[in-house]
Length: 431
Length: 163
Image (cartoon, each protein chain N blue to C red):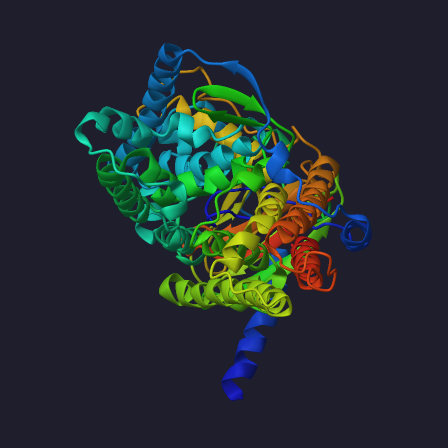
């Protein structure tokens, strides 16, 4: 599992066929049990409110966010500087791990537990607050924004990571970072924090993934709620389905590219020939996931005689936990191992021989978690994601279907979730 | 047809030579980590790496404590796995090597071009030249899936599955 095919020295062992059978069995059983015994009224929206743990003093918010966002700016700045000026090597240059490990894995996955961390650390949020005075207050609501732009940038990023032959090279990373920083900075100035929540690809992803978390901040109040119920609060926006499907497609292609079958397919294909084949692979897998989803959701919509133009975006919410499960299964070990490497590199971010944190000569401990633990986390991630997907999908169906009592109308969604889970498991077994 | 046959012959020749070749002992990167950057020559020429556009990491990773840096004796170690690189491709396709934890693995590579061999995670490197094979010898002490690559070409040679 060479994430970015340049980072990630230790890959996960394939899941055993036994684990596959157990997980798949549980997934199918839970799905139908949930359908048959499930509640008959939508419940999530009511409990998504959560309860306020404490209201935070606005001054304290400014104090904390100014520290965290300075740290965020430092992280982005160091990555950009390294991508531009430090030697092009994944040992000397910290940019590849900052991008593919910290920004892309650690922040979104930690947000699943702790709540939206990118909102806390994003330097673009700082730009948005600093320029607030100069912006005319426009009545924009989150619902009005489209997420298609974010979906497009996520697809580009996934292409760089999974298809391009030099994902960890400093030039492609520098270009990516400049585009990202430029895009988000101008948007933060023009549209403020609302714009960022809908257009910064990392912010969109982290916002979605953090909606399963127990913690959230609303109007300077720290809110605690049950896990997953926050998904009911995710506004249905145009392009929500696109964002979720693009990331699911990317993660699935990452799984596919780790199989021996794909390895032998691209073996001997170097440089752009490899990029070409991997691009076809990424597009094919993404198209497959999109058609599975659209097929299932359109079938529901037809059965329900529903004319809601944003029907599929509404149901995309039930794929968010699946996305979280996929993410955990694929990248948990990478976060643990490459995260250690990042700490080592952080001591000498520019390859100048510094030892800021005294970690420069440390080693990555590849035995810090056992293979059994990793396999258990993978299996639980997939199961939990699936179960949560079914539950959230059921709740969403009760909310948006006209024929709420019809179980048949919900069947396609359950079938879709089962199919996605089986695909994910097969890819982990073939890893 | 003819051309193909010759290649096959070459292959056999190459295989025979495995027994007799001068063995390049695995160089470990521990030295590179504790010492200055100049020592990191073990991973080959850094600038070469950059030019090829395929950079690799893990000097700090794993640590050489796991490598078996013993004087090589073909009588003692059974080289179960061998691979030939012909014209930038792995003859017979990329194969997966499976080993038990604690097993001593010996993996031999012959190539028609000079290259640097790199086992990720364990961070073992060795140089190969035409006619001079390299054998990676290591104790399978970390479980997981590890890639063996030709460092400069960025060519995946094998995946080692250790459980």
